[in-house]
Image (cartoon, rainbow, N blue to C red; front, side):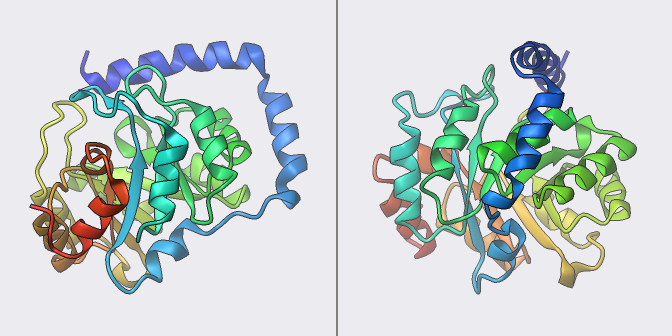
Length: 267
Protein backbone atom coordinates (compact mmCIF):
# COMPACT_ATOMS: atom_id res chain seq x y z
CA UNK A 1 0.00 0.00 0.00
CA UNK A 2 1.48 3.40 -0.98
CA UNK A 3 1.20 6.42 1.28
CA UNK A 4 -1.84 7.85 -0.53
CA UNK A 5 -3.74 4.59 -0.09
CA UNK A 6 -2.78 4.50 3.59
CA UNK A 7 -4.08 8.04 4.11
CA UNK A 8 -7.39 7.26 2.39
CA UNK A 9 -7.82 4.04 4.42
CA UNK A 10 -7.29 5.97 7.67
CA UNK A 11 -9.63 8.72 6.47
CA UNK A 12 -12.46 6.22 6.00
CA UNK A 13 -12.03 5.05 9.59
CA UNK A 14 -11.91 8.65 10.82
CA UNK A 15 -15.14 9.49 9.01
CA UNK A 16 -16.94 6.46 10.40
CA UNK A 17 -16.07 7.63 13.90
CA UNK A 18 -16.95 11.24 13.15
CA UNK A 19 -20.38 10.31 11.82
CA UNK A 20 -21.07 8.51 15.10
CA UNK A 21 -20.51 11.82 16.90
CA UNK A 22 -22.41 14.05 14.46
CA UNK A 23 -24.61 12.45 11.84
CA UNK A 24 -24.50 13.58 8.20
CA UNK A 25 -28.13 14.72 8.45
CA UNK A 26 -27.45 16.81 11.55
CA UNK A 27 -24.28 18.34 10.09
CA UNK A 28 -25.96 19.21 6.80
CA UNK A 29 -28.98 20.75 8.53
CA UNK A 30 -26.80 22.86 10.84
CA UNK A 31 -24.59 24.10 8.02
CA UNK A 32 -27.49 24.95 5.72
CA UNK A 33 -29.17 26.93 8.51
CA UNK A 34 -26.02 29.01 8.98
CA UNK A 35 -25.33 29.78 5.31
CA UNK A 36 -26.77 33.28 5.41
CA UNK A 37 -24.90 34.32 8.53
CA UNK A 38 -21.32 33.78 7.34
CA UNK A 39 -19.99 35.37 4.16
CA UNK A 40 -17.43 33.36 2.20
CA UNK A 41 -14.35 35.18 0.90
CA UNK A 42 -13.69 34.15 -2.69
CA UNK A 43 -10.58 31.98 -2.92
CA UNK A 44 -10.64 32.24 -6.72
CA UNK A 45 -10.79 36.04 -6.78
CA UNK A 46 -8.08 36.45 -4.15
CA UNK A 47 -5.66 34.43 -6.30
CA UNK A 48 -6.79 35.68 -9.71
CA UNK A 49 -6.83 39.39 -8.95
CA UNK A 50 -3.38 39.75 -7.38
CA UNK A 51 -0.91 41.50 -9.68
CA UNK A 52 2.03 39.21 -8.85
CA UNK A 53 2.13 35.49 -8.18
CA UNK A 54 -0.20 34.78 -5.27
CA UNK A 55 0.99 32.90 -2.21
CA UNK A 56 -1.16 30.34 -0.43
CA UNK A 57 0.65 29.95 2.89
CA UNK A 58 0.16 26.70 4.74
CA UNK A 59 -0.34 25.92 8.42
CA UNK A 60 1.30 22.51 8.74
CA UNK A 61 2.81 20.66 11.68
CA UNK A 62 4.06 17.48 9.99
CA UNK A 63 4.03 15.40 6.82
CA UNK A 64 4.43 11.67 6.09
CA UNK A 65 7.67 12.25 4.19
CA UNK A 66 9.34 14.80 6.50
CA UNK A 67 7.94 13.89 9.92
CA UNK A 68 7.59 16.77 12.36
CA UNK A 69 8.20 20.08 10.61
CA UNK A 70 7.10 22.51 13.33
CA UNK A 71 6.89 20.49 16.58
CA UNK A 72 5.81 23.48 18.66
CA UNK A 73 3.15 24.63 16.20
CA UNK A 74 0.78 27.26 17.57
CA UNK A 75 -1.69 27.54 14.71
CA UNK A 76 -3.01 30.90 15.84
CA UNK A 77 0.45 32.47 16.11
CA UNK A 78 1.29 31.16 12.64
CA UNK A 79 -1.98 32.49 11.24
CA UNK A 80 -1.35 35.93 12.72
CA UNK A 81 2.13 35.96 11.16
CA UNK A 82 0.63 35.14 7.78
CA UNK A 83 -2.01 37.84 8.18
CA UNK A 84 0.77 40.38 8.74
CA UNK A 85 2.52 39.18 5.59
CA UNK A 86 2.02 39.51 1.85
CA UNK A 87 0.04 36.29 1.35
CA UNK A 88 -3.27 36.05 -0.46
CA UNK A 89 -4.72 32.92 1.16
CA UNK A 90 -4.02 30.31 3.80
CA UNK A 91 -4.11 26.53 3.57
CA UNK A 92 -4.91 24.80 6.85
CA UNK A 93 -4.12 21.10 7.33
CA UNK A 94 -6.98 19.32 9.06
CA UNK A 95 -5.82 15.73 8.42
CA UNK A 96 -5.14 14.18 11.83
CA UNK A 97 -3.18 10.95 11.37
CA UNK A 98 -0.37 11.76 8.96
CA UNK A 99 -0.12 15.57 9.02
CA UNK A 100 -1.13 16.04 12.68
CA UNK A 101 -3.65 18.70 11.75
CA UNK A 102 -7.02 19.30 13.40
CA UNK A 103 -10.37 20.58 12.16
CA UNK A 104 -10.32 23.01 15.09
CA UNK A 105 -7.25 24.70 13.55
CA UNK A 106 -9.44 25.82 10.67
CA UNK A 107 -12.34 26.87 12.91
CA UNK A 108 -10.04 28.94 15.14
CA UNK A 109 -8.23 30.64 12.27
CA UNK A 110 -11.47 31.45 10.45
CA UNK A 111 -12.50 33.64 13.39
CA UNK A 112 -9.61 36.06 12.79
CA UNK A 113 -8.82 35.68 9.08
CA UNK A 114 -9.59 38.36 6.52
CA UNK A 115 -8.19 36.25 3.68
CA UNK A 116 -9.69 33.04 2.25
CA UNK A 117 -8.91 29.67 3.83
CA UNK A 118 -8.40 26.37 2.05
CA UNK A 119 -9.29 23.23 3.95
CA UNK A 120 -6.33 20.98 3.15
CA UNK A 121 -7.45 17.40 3.60
CA UNK A 122 -8.24 14.23 1.68
CA UNK A 123 -11.88 14.64 0.69
CA UNK A 124 -13.64 11.35 -0.03
CA UNK A 125 -17.15 12.09 1.29
CA UNK A 126 -19.75 14.89 1.03
CA UNK A 127 -19.63 15.00 4.81
CA UNK A 128 -16.23 16.68 4.69
CA UNK A 129 -17.50 19.42 2.37
CA UNK A 130 -20.31 20.41 4.72
CA UNK A 131 -17.84 20.17 7.59
CA UNK A 132 -15.44 22.50 5.75
CA UNK A 133 -18.19 25.12 5.29
CA UNK A 134 -19.10 24.88 8.96
CA UNK A 135 -15.45 25.28 9.99
CA UNK A 136 -15.11 28.51 8.02
CA UNK A 137 -13.34 27.40 4.83
CA UNK A 138 -13.56 29.31 1.56
CA UNK A 139 -12.31 26.37 -0.50
CA UNK A 140 -11.65 22.65 -0.37
CA UNK A 141 -8.99 20.46 -1.94
CA UNK A 142 -10.05 17.71 -4.33
CA UNK A 143 -7.34 15.24 -5.38
CA UNK A 144 -7.88 13.68 -8.81
CA UNK A 145 -5.69 10.69 -7.90
CA UNK A 146 -8.20 9.44 -5.32
CA UNK A 147 -11.50 10.41 -6.99
CA UNK A 148 -13.25 9.17 -10.11
CA UNK A 149 -14.84 11.70 -12.47
CA UNK A 150 -18.43 11.21 -11.27
CA UNK A 151 -17.46 11.61 -7.61
CA UNK A 152 -15.26 14.63 -8.31
CA UNK A 153 -18.02 16.31 -10.33
CA UNK A 154 -20.52 15.66 -7.54
CA UNK A 155 -18.16 17.08 -4.93
CA UNK A 156 -17.61 20.20 -7.05
CA UNK A 157 -21.37 20.68 -7.36
CA UNK A 158 -21.88 20.27 -3.60
CA UNK A 159 -19.06 22.69 -2.82
CA UNK A 160 -20.28 25.35 -5.24
CA UNK A 161 -23.76 25.04 -3.76
CA UNK A 162 -22.20 26.01 -0.42
CA UNK A 163 -20.28 28.93 -2.02
CA UNK A 164 -16.99 27.06 -1.68
CA UNK A 165 -14.30 27.04 -4.36
CA UNK A 166 -12.45 23.84 -5.26
CA UNK A 167 -8.71 23.55 -5.73
CA UNK A 168 -8.56 20.45 -7.93
CA UNK A 169 -5.16 18.80 -7.73
CA UNK A 170 -3.43 16.86 -10.49
CA UNK A 171 -0.07 15.11 -10.81
CA UNK A 172 0.11 14.11 -14.47
CA UNK A 173 -1.31 14.75 -17.95
CA UNK A 174 -4.07 12.13 -17.67
CA UNK A 175 -5.39 13.63 -14.44
CA UNK A 176 -5.29 17.10 -16.01
CA UNK A 177 -7.24 15.82 -19.03
CA UNK A 178 -9.97 14.60 -16.67
CA UNK A 179 -10.01 17.86 -14.72
CA UNK A 180 -10.15 19.94 -17.91
CA UNK A 181 -13.27 18.00 -18.93
CA UNK A 182 -14.91 18.82 -15.58
CA UNK A 183 -14.31 22.55 -16.05
CA UNK A 184 -12.39 23.17 -12.82
CA UNK A 185 -11.56 26.87 -12.38
CA UNK A 186 -8.67 26.40 -9.93
CA UNK A 187 -6.18 23.70 -10.84
CA UNK A 188 -3.28 22.73 -8.61
CA UNK A 189 -0.26 20.94 -10.01
CA UNK A 190 1.38 19.00 -7.20
CA UNK A 191 5.11 18.84 -7.84
CA UNK A 192 5.28 16.07 -5.23
CA UNK A 193 4.36 12.58 -6.33
CA UNK A 194 1.92 11.45 -3.64
CA UNK A 195 2.93 7.82 -4.12
CA UNK A 196 6.70 8.32 -3.80
CA UNK A 197 6.80 11.86 -2.34
CA UNK A 198 9.58 12.84 -4.76
CA UNK A 199 9.47 16.50 -5.87
CA UNK A 200 10.01 18.06 -9.32
CA UNK A 201 9.11 21.69 -10.06
CA UNK A 202 9.25 20.84 -13.75
CA UNK A 203 5.87 19.11 -13.31
CA UNK A 204 4.18 22.52 -13.26
CA UNK A 205 5.90 23.57 -16.48
CA UNK A 206 5.07 20.30 -18.26
CA UNK A 207 1.37 20.46 -17.40
CA UNK A 208 0.79 24.20 -17.76
CA UNK A 209 0.53 24.05 -21.53
CA UNK A 210 -2.20 21.40 -21.31
CA UNK A 211 -4.54 23.59 -19.23
CA UNK A 212 -7.63 24.51 -21.27
CA UNK A 213 -9.27 27.98 -21.22
CA UNK A 214 -6.12 29.27 -19.57
CA UNK A 215 -7.29 32.89 -19.23
CA UNK A 216 -10.25 31.84 -17.06
CA UNK A 217 -8.31 29.50 -14.80
CA UNK A 218 -6.06 29.84 -11.78
CA UNK A 219 -3.03 27.55 -11.93
CA UNK A 220 -1.45 26.77 -8.55
CA UNK A 221 2.03 25.26 -8.25
CA UNK A 222 2.13 23.09 -5.13
CA UNK A 223 5.09 21.69 -3.18
CA UNK A 224 8.84 21.95 -3.68
CA UNK A 225 9.18 25.75 -3.56
CA UNK A 226 12.09 26.38 -1.22
CA UNK A 227 13.73 29.62 -2.40
CA UNK A 228 13.13 32.94 -4.13
CA UNK A 229 14.55 31.35 -7.28
CA UNK A 230 11.91 28.64 -7.15
CA UNK A 231 9.11 31.18 -6.74
CA UNK A 232 10.46 33.27 -9.61
CA UNK A 233 10.69 30.16 -11.78
CA UNK A 234 7.06 29.08 -11.32
CA UNK A 235 5.93 32.69 -11.83
CA UNK A 236 7.93 33.00 -15.06
CA UNK A 237 6.49 29.80 -16.51
CA UNK A 238 2.98 31.11 -15.89
CA UNK A 239 1.70 29.89 -12.51
CA UNK A 240 -0.83 32.23 -10.92
CA UNK A 241 -0.19 31.06 -7.37
CA UNK A 242 2.14 28.96 -5.26
CA UNK A 243 1.15 26.84 -2.27
CA UNK A 244 3.99 26.91 0.26
CA UNK A 245 4.12 25.23 3.65
CA UNK A 246 7.34 23.60 4.78
CA UNK A 247 9.52 26.57 3.80
CA UNK A 248 7.62 28.91 6.12
CA UNK A 249 7.06 26.35 8.86
CA UNK A 250 10.81 25.86 9.28
CA UNK A 251 11.42 29.59 9.88
CA UNK A 252 11.02 31.07 13.32
CA UNK A 253 10.07 34.48 11.93
CA UNK A 254 7.43 33.63 9.36
CA UNK A 255 6.59 37.17 8.23
CA UNK A 256 10.28 37.82 7.54
CA UNK A 257 10.50 34.59 5.56
CA UNK A 258 7.56 35.65 3.39
CA UNK A 259 9.13 39.05 2.80
CA UNK A 260 12.52 37.53 1.97
CA UNK A 261 10.92 35.05 -0.41
CA UNK A 262 9.00 37.81 -2.21
CA UNK A 263 12.03 40.06 -2.54
CA UNK A 264 14.62 37.62 -3.80
CA UNK A 265 16.54 37.20 -0.55
CA UNK A 266 15.71 33.60 0.32
CA UNK A 267 18.26 31.11 -1.03
